[in-house]
Image (tube, rainbow, N blue to C red; front, side, top):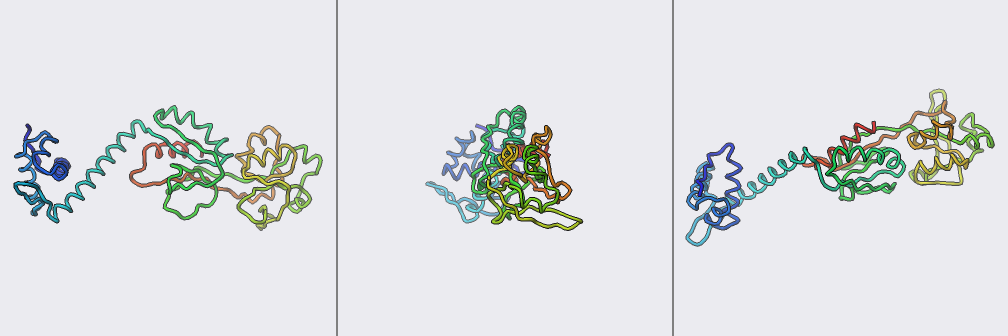
Length: 302
């Protein structure tokens, strides 16, 4: 068998592992079998640890070993340090090939239009990651483990989660050319009182749209006969000529570009934006699969 050489410094971790093995095996001989060391080598190693610390860690008898109070404290610390070393090594190993299931929650419209089209490129970079994506406008509890990463719009509530900004989107009021031809184009915000204004079915008790005029911001109550929980649906309804909708520009960019929807009242647009963030549980032990995915979103969604 090998002799134990544990002078300290670089071998401190090995000394910790040896001490834990002695306690868990209950004897020097048991620890020696586990570590391929002779019982005498294990005993001398424990002697050197105690001499370096200046305290007795183990009480030896012919029948058993018992921990002193200092030995119990040393055992707890040794186990924690060894666990931290294992975590650190796993994180470094994961950097080469992040792997595992990655649970992502994204809003319905933004997820379908902006996040899902990027997944193929992401998985080409990280083929060992399994992306489990749920598109829903229902807020999931990331802190409770319902998702690894959640993409959120608007102001963030106070929490212990880490947030990284992915971008922002402006709001725009749109209508179809057919709707405007039939009902007239609103020239000032007050004209909306005679139009069907399609709204979201959350956030506000009374639907109001913000505007600005001559440097002064104001809000206008609007009414309509359809409400929906996402901007893509409202954009589709506007394209069908049902009414006007005020939505995130990202959700109707294609329709505006090819003329299926027309922005209106842009001179009164307050330029308000919604910030988009990725939320996740941060810290030193964040899994590599989460880190690389958030980095990828930051680089590609902005």
